[in-house]
Length: 118
Image (cartoon, rainbow, N blue to C red; front, side):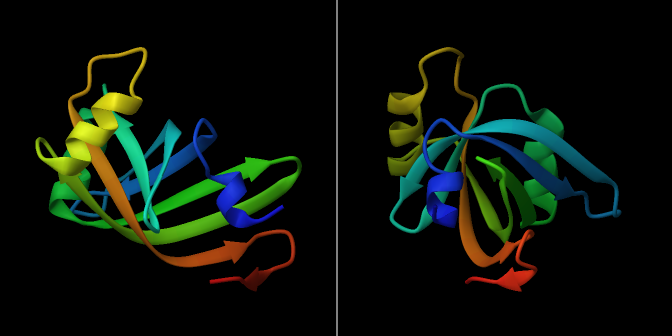
């Protein structure tokens, strides 16, 4: 299985952010798939996470599927309107969307094999 399958649409992920004053925060989120090579996550109730991303774009995502574990690092952006927000809204079926979070993936690390894969 590829790392992309591990974080594709519908997969449960852990999204880690950090405020500008170095206070970490972690949330369980559901992947809304990819837009190009970027990961889409819908913000429906993540006030602290969104604020952290606005202060510090660096994020880390930990994913697990079928016993495979990956750590993804990247830069996140928050969208309250526009193309990415509209796509996120189309992909949201349960909750009211506050914002769309798009993660530009910079590094993927296979935690089982202890090696960088991207």
